[in-house]
Length: 236
Image 1 (cartoon, rainbow, N blue to C red):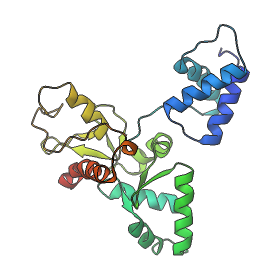
Image 2: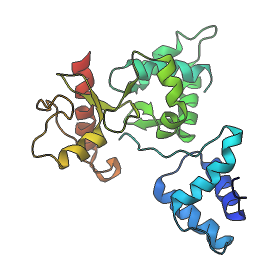
Image 3: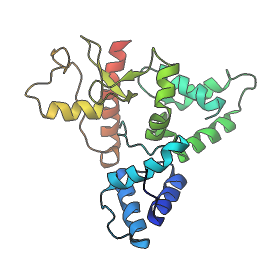
Image 4: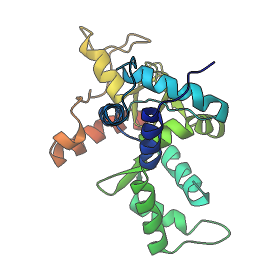
């Protein structure tokens, strides 16, 4: 039988529900604050143990707090999801999305309405906006992963290394496996040569670095994104 939740667990859950998705460092900060506000003798200091206790109580409600690595709802959103998944590079430009609005049925959306929906989806962390282009936020990937695999079997691909949904990735030209840019960058750091982990052929694409986009100048961010798209273009 799962242990009862403490007030610290309840406060943490309320904070997480209000935010929707947070980075791991922010989750740890919230855990510490909640435990300081509601101390519990003998409680574990590990975030994983803290989340495991929460998930044990959430499981009967078909809910779960999931952890994932960032790649870096309604009818309108499902249509937008189509565009991003079928784009080939994991991004949809604002122009493409505005054009998509004219095809929505049974009622088209005005340009201002589309812009408002996009802004709301970004604010609620369903989408990320990067220099006028949109891609799925880690929240969408975590919460919609199974839906995407079920409804987009030809477009949805799994990363060969972490086995999770891969939106922004590179593709091996020889065997066709897909790798998240962050996964392949970490993998090749430990290899003497940049060879595909599956077929062992030389990796044909530029290997992106692991610097967070916020720490790179805009020109470097553009080059990094171009590198992540290369594999998709070769796949098509």
